[in-house]
Image (cartoon, rainbow, N blue to C red):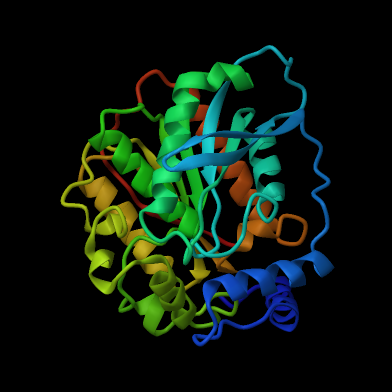
Length: 331
């Protein structure tokens, strides 16, 4: 279907506000420019939540900052399930503040604790620094979740875009390294493969927010060298097997160069026996869930995420038949 008119307006506003990716400019310079531009147009999140706490935890190579969200209308002493969240931004830009509104919405929709991870960014810290930080945060939550009012026996990972890549890889790490056990992985328009040859990369239609060349730029800022892109912890779609991973919800957007690789990952998960739900939101673009106050599809997606987390945490058995079908949702 055509790109939603409101999405078109959002895309135009983004292009007029934020600097375009320049392959001659470093990721560090892009990050500084984006932060300066965001300070002019992005205001503090207003959705009320029960509490928010910033703290540092031990990481894979020094302390890592986390932000802990608890939902409204939950007694302060009640231990809640925990979803560990990794933000998008091509592993290069964005931070805890850029995704604060999304985390607030998810913690309320799911009725769970959300722990957002301020992992190290490239190019100063290239692969695997960021994903090792994310896995270290999951290990800390599993060992110390009760310190933040969580129930470490009920865990999930969630991420959007490059953060979806990290969430998928952390799920693989948890399987490969002996835990912790996860009830669910939620991958929102994830990066899954160091290739740019899918139909959605080659013919993205009205993919106005993220271009295929920009994806390529972020990959080259993230990886230490070209060959590393073939490693499964960089490109989770290239893992020899996805068997034994937790159930998955994979959300994609119609107008997104990452659409096909996200859906390919959902299909691989199902083929390897993982219970998987794949949903494509039609008429919207990459990053649409960020625009909670403008796009009805964003609120629909958050409601779907919240329901999936509630169901996973309520179920004692996450096993399934490994089936998956692609559902599409219109604005």
